Amino acid sequence: MSAGHDHGIATNQNEKVLWAALALTTTFLIAEFIAGIMLNSLALLSDAAHMFTDAAALGIALAAIRIARRSSDKLRTYGYHRFEILAATFNALILFAVAIYILYEAWQRFQHPVDVQSVGMMWVAALGLVINLISMKLLMSGKERSLNVKGAYLEVLSDMVGSVGVILGGAIIYFTQWAWVDTVVAVGIGLWVLPRTWILLKESLNLLLEGVPKGIVLAEVEIAILNVRDVISLHDLHIWGITSGKHSLTCHIVMRPEANQPKLISEINKILDKRFSITHTTLQCELEPCTGNSHCDLDDQNLADEHGQDHGDHGHDHGPSK
Image (cartoon, rainbow, N blue to C red; front, side, top):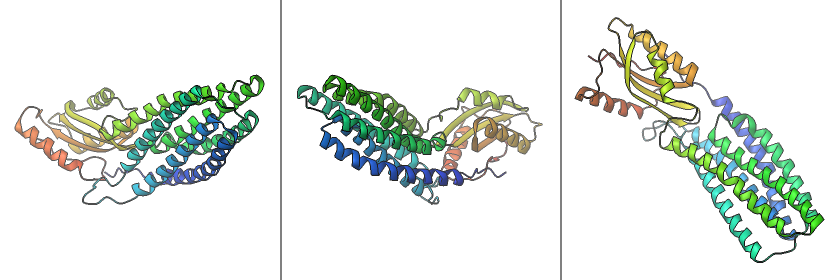
């Protein structure tokens, strides 16, 4: 029974919007960096730094998409799909580094305050806000399908908040002459970014550690399989993600002796696909549990060997163990 779902269209769409967002972001970050130096605004430089991480994230996301297209080989039997998760992890680490650096610079500014040109600061930040909104609109459709695109989206979102903060800070400085507000805004941007970056990093590390993908509850999957007719029990249930939206499952199913094994596997696969979007499965049917004996250990080793093969089939019939 063929299973592979074609994600090519979504990937192509992601690549187009990433290119557009990269062009907009790169152009503006250069202008904002120069303006930040000329206007002596740490908030603008902070925003420009986030723009730089936006551009880096978009570039890495594009590289990940292209590398992920490479075919599987004898060394990487799942192909290069996992590179997307490595890119998302790298983006999160960059965000952490930038946020910590901005906080350090803010501390230096508190020690040695400087004058800030608030009017120019607001104009530059307003233009940056427009660029951020356009980029967010472009990335919105792909962020739920790809951690890679989600990482780039979070980068742009954090920068949008930064632009809003710079505009508000510039207005306060203009009316009050409180130059220290510029530093406070920079600190606020750094603190706002950190928790969102942690969420992205946690999701990425979960996939790298082959944890249960976000949105899937192991107990719910177990109940769904047990509710299938002719299933007595199950064990050795494992669920993990190769990359965003590409989930795999292995499980030993104890079935009734009179059950039609191909039909049973087909029914379980339909449920896993429809309810949990799990399309790559390896199901071993047994007439009695093999847990705790050498035969089961051997089966587990065989399954582990098979995990290294990109099957392309939805269900795999190993035959009932007796």
